Image (cartoon, rainbow over all chains, first blue to last red; front, side, top):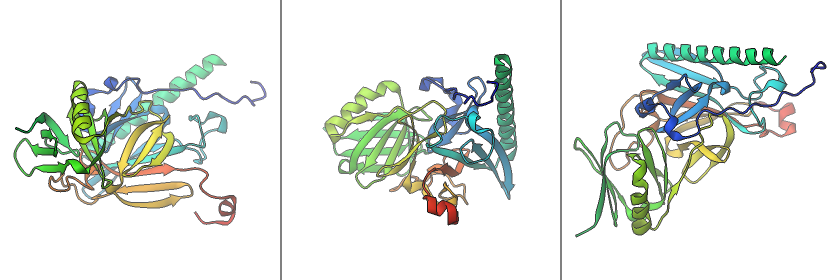
Length: 136
Length: 198
């Protein structure tokens, strides 16, 4: 509102409703980017775990000898980013997954995944901004 | 004749190769399809069982009395009834249907059970980390906990033997999990927050 005191309501988002919505590629137990559902599916101990793009802060690739590392950072409290009223989560007193790091010898793949995540994030932020502009 | 129920194309503890899994009253066995060492489990060690969606298909997770877990992936949805009967009649445990959270949220509650750390989103597990897979944990910052996984220095495939793939599940896929970091708020007291070191 005009005083700028309105607390933005958290908008709920959801990756999937049913487990048959996972992309078939999750069988390979690797990282899968699901553009259609704006979701990154990460393999954790044999289980495909969806993370909506709205939870992701960024992804970065680094190299160490023959290994490449992909670190996916999630939004969580206490990171000093964004305004308080725009925290993309419902409950700041909850526990948060803050990052997941994977490694592989295929560095090109990680560069590509990091790139795809950045693009997906950029598109999601853009969409959100367009929505806000419409509301104003 | 002993009754045996068998299932093909089952992956044991995230093995790269599938195998035949056989259930009988006195226990469970798994043998890789291409031959090799079999894994067996005495029925007396079975303390519980859970059914949920995994990567290859549906998973039966056997909770051992000794606090470990055995993961069997590759079942079909329609195998549930048959498996439920097997566990109920032969091992006197329920095959508990554990539906996982698919919301895609990164906030919830980290909870510690006998054999695993479970991250729950809206009271449904999003993922679990068996303690046996954890190689190290440390306080990475105020309210931030880093959990590291075993064998971060070698990319060897799963072994099958008496302890199949223990401490190696993080390395099973083409993307090997090295570390998970959690943010746990409110774990420092006011006193610590003011004068303490992170």
